[in-house]
Every structure is written in C-alpha cells, then in structure tokens.
Length: 256
Ligand SMILES: [Zn+2]
Image (cartoon, rainbow, N blue to C red; front, side):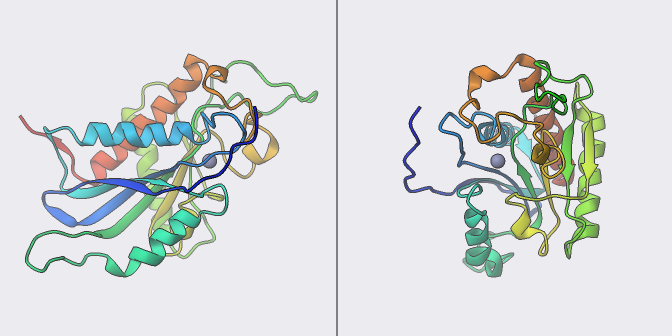
C-alpha cells in the first residue's frame, strides 16, 4: 500500500448533557489519526469505535445522567497530541460558564476527568526470544488503565484509575483490568497537570508496547483482518469497563 496523504484533520465531539449538573463533565476520548499505511484498525480504530459505541448507548432516550459526558475524537495524537492541546488552549478558561446567562446551558462544562482510549485489541504477551509471537490472545490478557505518577494530579488520577478497576470487576465479562502508574504518549497527557487523567490500552504503553508486545503497532499489518474474536472481545471488555465507570461517576439511570 502507498503512504497515505495527510489532509486536514478535524476534531469531533458530541455531548450527553447531565440533568442535575449540566455544568460538570467527564471527557471520554480516542484519537482519529493513525500510522501504518494500512487501516490503523487497532490504533486507533478500536479506541474510536469504543467511544462511538458508548456515545450510542448514552444517547438512548431512556438514559439519564446526572452529570455531563463529552465523547471526543481528537486529531493529531500521533504527532504530539496537538488536537488535545488545542482543546485545552481554546476551552480551559470557558469551563463552567453559563452562556447565555440564565439559559441553563454550559457550552464548556467544568472538567471532572479525562479518559483516553487508545489501541485496545491485542494482548498476546511478550515476544519470544526468536521474535515470534503467540497467535492467540493470551488467557491472562487485561485492560491496562494508566495514570502518570509524575504529574500534579497524580493522587486524583490514581483515584480515578481505581474506580475503573472496580467497574471492570463489576461490569466486564471476560478480561480483568490492571492499573499502572506510567501513563505516556496519550491525549490524556496534556490534561494530567490540570484534572484527573487516565488512559486505557491493550498493554502498558511504556514497558510493554515499547518492548514490542504489539507487532502491528504503526505497521501496515494493522488491518481489520489481522484480529480474531478474542482480540475484539478484549476491546469489548474495555468498553464495558468505561461504560460501567462513567455510568457510575455520572449517576446514569434508565428511565421507563
Ligand atoms: Zn494510538
């Protein structure tokens, strides 16, 4: 396949407005851009699919949340999170302001937390000595929830990460979650000194993906047909984890 030709990249979000506290929100994000001259089906087709699926669930007419949720697809994560940085530059000062006054509308609710979803499908373990990999999802595959211990909001971000672990234990059907303290290379990074910020991935970004645990990462082989049902099921479990956690955090209920 030939290299892709980069064009304009846009930022997309939709918002579930909370009924009790529309002025406060959690942000659930993923990045739209990808490397590899292929489809970037895992990185980050999987994270964006997860966020869009959650937006579909929460947009149901019978779903109410007390607080607001913003579903965000960022651009330019792969080139240094310029999309997330632009969002902060343009909107940080607008937080929690009712506009127009008296309308009950908050174009930029106060940020309570930022949860980024990246590459979500492939946890086949570490490469063998000869460089080959298991062709199967490893039985002990997990959803890696990471916060950054060297950030101003480390204590608050760690607390958010543990809420995701508890939600995984309660709501995910097949795979557990693990919490790590070295979140890096993610759109949650620009938020980590401002608000509680975590990332969800198939592996730890630093020690595992950085050590070759995902041979499709940024490669032409990152196409839909590379992945099996077990791989997609890990992504589904990440979706269950975030759905349970954000549903709990925002006071989601089903109305009849
Ligand atoms: Zn990615």
